[in-house]
Length: 149
Image 1 (cartoon, helix red, strand yellow):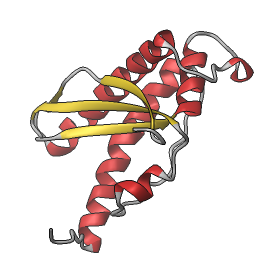
Image 2 (cartoon, helix red, strand yellow):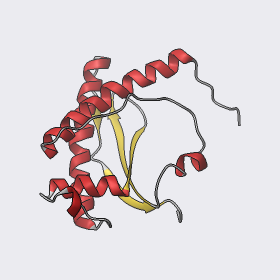
Image 3 (cartoon, one colour):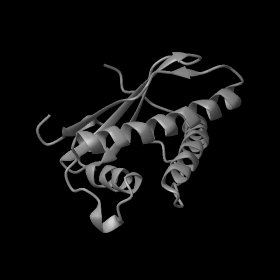
Image 4 (tube, one colour):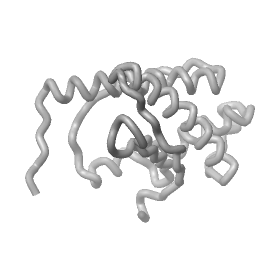
């Protein structure tokens, strides 16, 4: 299999699309949590699955959204279990100290709602950017242990 290479212009373009998309998603999350949410400047790089997994704890939440119209493919948002617990806890009126350490169905449901709001906002921003209708599927959320799966 040939190794994929991206030019600097392609990387910059993907970073800008990511910035627009995630900026809108962060605004939606900020509104949902009634807290300030900041994102970092996107970095685009190619990596292997093995290298990627090393950046995550064992419990990881994976959110998958499929593009139904306007774009082809899927979008994955991958959260560290601890971060997902903080988001779910805040949505349920808990303090940071009370954030769940282990995610149960209730917390995963809260994460799914947060991601639904975030990717919906992201899709709207991309629709404006690309000047075409972009429709997405409802998010599918699952908690996995990357050390085992």
